[in-house]
Amino acid sequence: MTRVHNFSAGPAALPEVVLAQAQAEMLDWEGAGMSVMEMSHRGREFGQIISEAEADLRTLLAVPGNYRILFLQGGATLQFSAIPLNLMGRGGAPDYVVTGEWSSKALKEAGRFGSVNVAASTPAGAHDHVPPWGEWRLDPAAAYVHYCSNETVHGVEFHWVPETGGVPLVADMSSHLLSGPLDVSRFGLIYAGAQKNIGPAGLVIVIVRDDLLGGASPQCPGLLDYKLNADAGSMPNTPATYSIYIAGLVFKWLLAGGGLTAIDRANDEKARLLYDFIDSSTLYTNPVAIPDRSRMNVPFMLRRPGLDDGFLAGAEARGLVQLRGHRSLGGMRASLYNAMPIEGVRALVEYMREFQTQHG
Image (cartoon, rainbow, N blue to C red):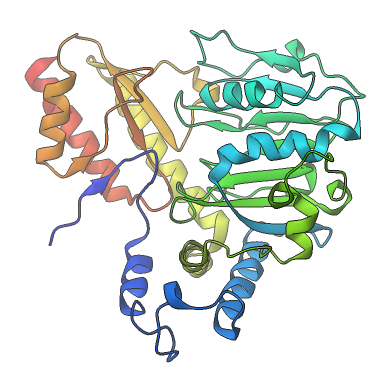
């Protein structure tokens, strides 16, 4: 069997060594005589799995002791509701920063639960940059400030952390958490769907500061209450056990490879290789302002119309798959998550060069 180079934005590629270990342990996890999928979440075996996963994630991110790590379900999108239900009552209307598809959806969902301010935004048809700091209009009495630090669809990434003073900063980091070092202490709450850099779809990681627990609205469903989940060790009901197991293997893979400093260097190299070629080419173009380009999600267009289908067919024939751009934008998109090896990016650039020679 030949593995393809999978550039999907999510569910995304996982490290081959992780998949191989999961395969080897499918029928019998460490002598338990059963698969992780068959284990009781209350049993000793799974207790070890989730405890190690949390400890390894704390190590990777140097998570301070006054933060809780939650392994929840429903993906990041469910957090668009959970966040206002837990945090809106702490102050005035929350501030939202809109830079693309996901922050737009988070804003809309939060508006179902109360008043929301748009502190900064880019135009709907031009989510191609991060709003300059001087344009932000933050309310010092806001309950929290929410932003999406990497927009998967539009390929816009914050390479800096907003300074919000005493107002809790809430970040959707679904598509680049664990792609490099991060100062968790600058945030009140971080959340991330697992299906990019962490593990299988369905799991979401929430890292929340202790002082933000316990303020949920009376209308907040119990399973969305962060304090309830924290008090229950992420298990008020049956958690996504197998997804947590895979995430734990990914954490160990990252630690074994040198941690987030090492993966940061690798991600820089991959992104630089692809962007440098696009910028020097005559056929391809990237719409995002250079300082705000995402390292994880690289959208690109062909300057000549009518070539997209031919480009995609040729790429797939070479084992370069899942390159079609988001349906709202068209064009192409190459996602370069942690599990994408540099060899995959080299193969993509070589194909793009060949296609340009034929059609440029």
